[in-house]
Each structure stands twice: as C-alpha cells, then as structure tokens.
Image 1 (tube, each protein chain N blue to C red):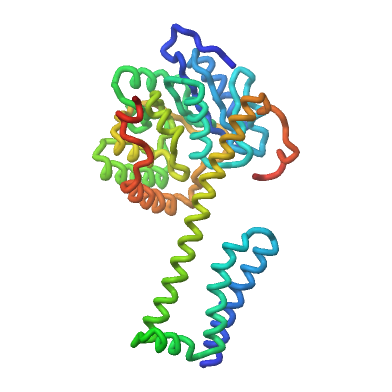
Image 2 (image 1 turned 135 degrees about the vertical axis):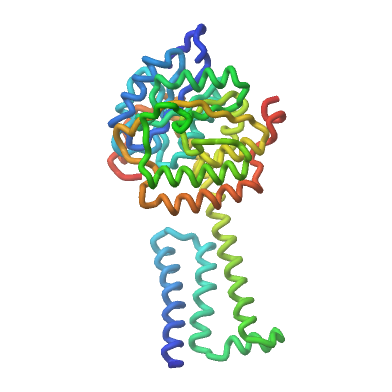
Length: 249
Length: 123
C-alpha cells in the first residue's frame, strides 16, 4: 500500500475509482492521479469486470475486486466501506473511464477544506471554459435531473449526475452504512441534504471518456430520468442516516 | 365467443403455471415463492372452466356486484406479488453487502490479483 506523505493536503485521503470493464483507461487514470494528486491512496474497485481490469491497474494502486457486478452504487459503497474501515479522513470519488482529469482533483479538496462543506461535487457546468460538452440529449437529461433535485432540496446544484466528488469523514461514515444502489449521484444529494450535511459545488473541467462504455446507455436515458424522478420522490420518505450531528459524533 | 374467451383465460392460467413449473425445475424459483404464481394461475384455470365462478364467490361473500368480487381477488394477489418483490429487494441488498465483504476480505488476504476460472465468463 502506498503511504501518504504527511505534508500534503491529501493526507489520509483515499481516491475511490469504480471501474467496470475499464481495462483500456484505468491505468491512465491511476497514473494521472499519482502524478497530479500525490499523497493520496488510490483504490480501484473492480466491479466484476470481465476484461481483466484488475490486471491493468498499476501496482502502486490498491485493488478491491468484487466477485460479480454490483452496479455503480454497490461498487462505490465498497470503496467508502474500505475508507471507513481504514480510517481515512477524506474520500475522493473519480470515474475509471478517464472523464475526470486528475489535475482537477485538488480543486475539490481545496473546496472541501475551505468551504466547510461535507461533500464537494465537481461541476462541469460551472466551469468558464468547459472542455466537456455533452450531447444534446444527455444535456437535456442532466437538466431534468437537476430540476428535480433543485426543486426537492432548494439547493442551486448544476451537475447532479457528476461522479467527481470529495467528502469528509462524516459522509464516509454515512455512505459506509448505507448508499443508494441504482441512481446514487442525484439521490445522495437529496438524502445528505435531508440529513443535515452541507453540499457544495466547485467548477472543474471534464473530458470525453477515453475507453469503455457509459453506465447509462443513450437509449435508456429517458427511462433513466423517469426512474430517477421516482426514486427521488421516494427518497423524501427515507432517512437512511442519522442526522449530521449524530452521524459525526 | 364465450368459448374463445374461455380459451384465452385458460391459456393465461396455463402459461403462468408453466412459467412457475419451469422456473422451479431450473432452480430459478424457490418453492415458497412459486406458491404465489401457482395461486395466481389456478384461479385463471378454474374461472375458465367454471363460468359462474365469480358469481358464486360474490354470492358467498354477499357482494352485490360480481366485478367487485373479481377486483377483491385481484387485489389479494397483487398484495402477494408485492410481498414477493419486497423479499427479493431485501435479498438483493444483502447480496450486495455480502459481495462487498467478499471483496474487502479478498483484498485483506491479498487475493485481489489472483485470476478466477470464471474470469472469462460474463458476470
């Protein structure tokens, strides 16, 4: 296991990289993190890949192999459970497909340390000069989900489906205890907000994925939006975590 | 026309029962859950062969309108299916936790780099 250096802001920070059949991109992601985000431990959660993703992970990263595919929620929660069990103070989530540039990671950590937020989300839509432009249909879908989340929380979120996130120990503890399985990104915002956690966004740039396939195929987008809307409405009646004060004590 | 209607109802009931039996034989369905499908399929068969079955039930339960009797029976089976799906959802959550524990333990034991025989098989 790579040791964290004591003089970096990323001390006791775990980067969680969920990866499903990302053999073509995961090595680059991990190497970029090593170059641009020194001091953090990198954990690749191989979510039951069948293309040898685990073998493509450089040796300086940790690998947690799940026995079969659980989906994004199950894979990410496995990472948070690891972070909780090993006492990490900060967990950082980054996709294994190369969409999230490692050089942007420090922005989230800086925001987490200075804003007093419990979770910081990297938003591609707050960036002044975005390198990432989603296709029109995808952008429309993101807009609908954003409208749902903002209406239900009252927060001015711009990128509710971004998987580029950093959180503190309190949130790690909550996620280790329970995590949505099907539509985790937007659901987490609503559930954390209802539990009293503070959520902020910070501008980041993103790029097109370098390999693999999206976890939400284009043709299923409309159905996805309907299901997310339904799940968010159900979340209004859920309280999977104690409130923030009880959770962090 | 009545015969055609009976044949359709008969086919629906037989299909449900056949699906339940096939799933049972293939080991995809446990006996306790198959009961729901069997209890759903049998009434179709009975009502196909016994045209006044709904009227008989309505009379016995002192329900004035036969349609209401049918709705009551349908609601009962919907509740049973709802219960079945609840069980499946709980089991799925447990399987997720179990799989995560397996992954964490494999990591702890340094087994993450080992190659399974099933690596080439789709999950």
